[in-house]
Length: 373
Image (cartoon, rainbow, N blue to C red; front, side, top):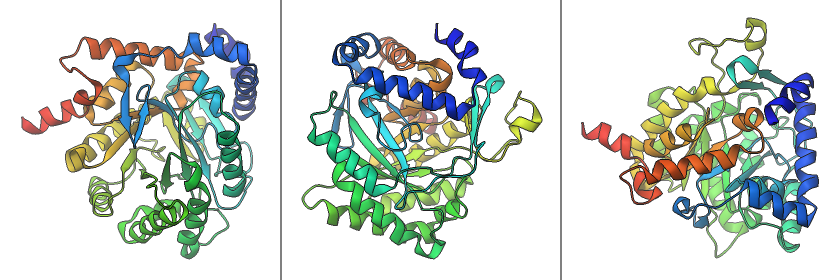
């Protein structure tokens, strides 16, 4: 059914317009209690075997929605209704900004991929914080884990980046279950240079201190999201820094600026569009980075695997490689509202057929065995 709707409607629309239309439908459905309850029962059945504790929270399962879909925290209940076990909103910047000029989102249907150069279009951290506070105060329809992904405001010079992130952290930490420092989007000039450890160290330290000031008595988990384009030595350096600074985790990975060697089938003019490539083509490198991180840090940090996850097999592979949680986004565009349900059902079946009694026992199993060999 969704495939037909995609071919007849969404595929004919500008991708950004199609996103806004589909998201509006999700939010509208979630506002009607009877429909919301029915939809959740159908789309978000719970599997007890998939329950996981991560980031200090008990979750129904490991599968969440990556940042980028709900930039402004306007549809958390609707997305939870569809079965996502956690929702990461953002990327949010200190100042509101419109993002890059349109057209800025492209479908590579033949590759089951997207290219985006959105440029952190969002309402700003003050507005998003107010929205999250209002949701919490208004008895939300569903209890779910909400992460907030923060980035640098485009007009802020690099030398002021730390202060810009700190502003967002102070505003958003009180209403976030976890915070993510995004230094890996290719669509904000100079942002990826912040992944260099000499720049990343003061940034992460300042955000950690800001979150602690903003929420005395509660330690808000802090993670960093890295790019798949980092050299292996730089992946190791970020991992070592995260352990040194006692971060809570790393998200691997964001979109890629690479095009060569990915076996892209889409027309060259389309695949050469500027921006970050997500979806199936980034799967192998994201998996490589995840395995490298787990081999480096083991259980000292929580790892979230994202990038090219389409099926339950993809999600299970990330768990065996070292991910406690997995996230997706591009697969949602192509698979539709039953996607999370399929992932959950497949993961439960794979766990039941595995030698591991719990999902936690499966985390990193393949990487550990590879290292032992």
